[in-house]
Amino acid sequence: MTRLASILCLFFLTLFCGSATDELSAGIRFIKTYQPKFDVSLISDARIAAEVKLALKARAEFPWAKATPWEIYANDVLPYAVVNEARDEWRQLFYDKFAPLVKNCKSGTEATLFIARHIQPLIKVKYSTSRRIPHQGVAESLKLGKVSCTGQSILLIAALRSVGIPARMVGLLTWAHVLGNHNWVEAWCDGEWKMIEYNEQDFNTPWVMSSISMLNPHNPQNHIIATTWKPDASNDKFPLIWEALYNPITKQIYIAPEKLTINGTNVTPRYIKLASDWVKAQPNYIPGSKIMLRVEAKSFAKKNNAIAHPVTLKSSSGKILASGTSPGPQDDMREFLEFTLPESEKSAILEISLPNGSTITRHISHSNTPAQVIYIHL
Image 1 (spheres, rainbow, N blue to C red):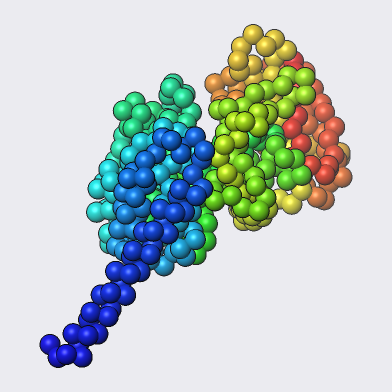
Image 2: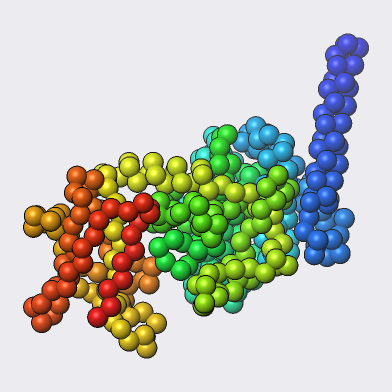
């Protein structure tokens, strides 16, 4: 090797080592600066350094990680936790499991979809309402083999972060059409955030997109929030639904300020547009007003008191516009019979057929709300 070649080799080696050292220092400083207050005495400096080193190892190994801007990589790959789950050490475990499986993937999109599609059979953890708590840590979820949607999201985020894919949890306090919530995952894939879920085959889960399309963006309870390690200018907080309480007088879900411990960023406008575009792209899309119907018994002795009845949507002239059967007691409590009142019709009639041969009718017209939720009690 010539003297010039030796000098150049030493220069680039020094440059590389210096760059790696700078990222390690910057990463440790970032995590310590913005970690939740309750973690300060819980997570050691050695643990933080080890987490950042593993994250930087993935950054050096995978092309999508190298291409990710540092501010996104620091915020959504380096963190050792997602919300306020148990602070388990999952990064090496998941790297060992998933890195060999995505080593030949050509892009972050390809790697993300591979992990989402295969994570459930690989780690043998399924959705279950009998999980201990919604926000289980990785270790408990792996041991029990059952989780909530929040637990699923924590597992998927851990798997993605372990191979250098930025990932964060997204959720809302409650849907507009039914009292209930959901948490899912966003992955930074090749330059943009994409909605993905545990054990799903593709981005943009259909039932979630449908539910988002009915949200009222002017209602704070319907805002969609993503987790962030570093707070943004809005200083939003992620809605930890497991910490929430329900006020039966105002019929509002709320979280005490002291329980709002995880930073969030409001992504509602992007999701409203995404869901709107998704709805319009469906093969059966009809411009108009969405109608959501449940027929229920007046007795509330059962948790799910829905009754399955044939329902017909008719124009004011008697033309049948749509027909179907309302959800029954065996269906999910979030399920509704959905119709669209076409823009071409000013009003219509809902006709519910009863077992005795009689019918109940309800006149409907367009409204300014994303969806009209109608309950008929018999």
